[in-house]
Length: 199
Ligand code: ITT
Image (tube, rainbow, N blue to C red):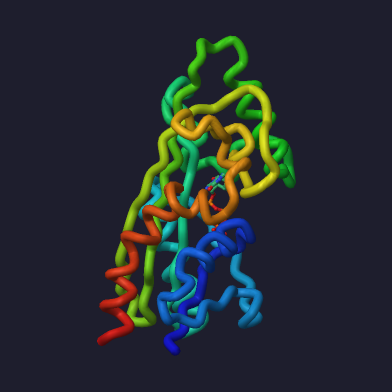
């Protein structure tokens, strides 16, 4: 089987991507499983730049085809913030997902609801040659002031999907994987993976 390195240190992303690529005929490996520790500085100006930087770094360090995900939550009332800064949004050092959610809700205090928002994801697939291919996905919803659900990660407990009447954290992983931004991006990356591994 062909091997694909998942170029991420986020356990929530790994679980989702492993389920999304189940049945794709690939052996999926994490950096920890191959003993690789890399901290990439995400200083790009776009999701595409950061995703490419992560995928290329992991591919070059391992000699394997590597797939990264750069994603973020864009809240309309905050003009797209936290966006690219979704992971580093809270000023607290060593901030947790709970700290990030709390900080976002503080920023939205007093602003008129609904707090419409969307998640963005860009997946990059890098080859050891340095070549990179990209795919994107999006998921629309709204931020709510109270947390519901314990599944998922990050902003999921306060990301409400009006059509379902549930937050992302109330969905089982297979449901999240039917509609999420990451699911869309990974699905759009399937033809890229197919082309690379069928060469
Ligand atoms: P890697 O760079 O190692 O992949 P990361 O967590 O730093 O992990 P990003 O730089 O792409 O990943 O940051 C994206 C942040 O956006 C993530 O940490 C969450 O806070 C948030 N986020 C992204 N996708 C999400 C999802 O599906 N549900 C909830 N929050 C999400």
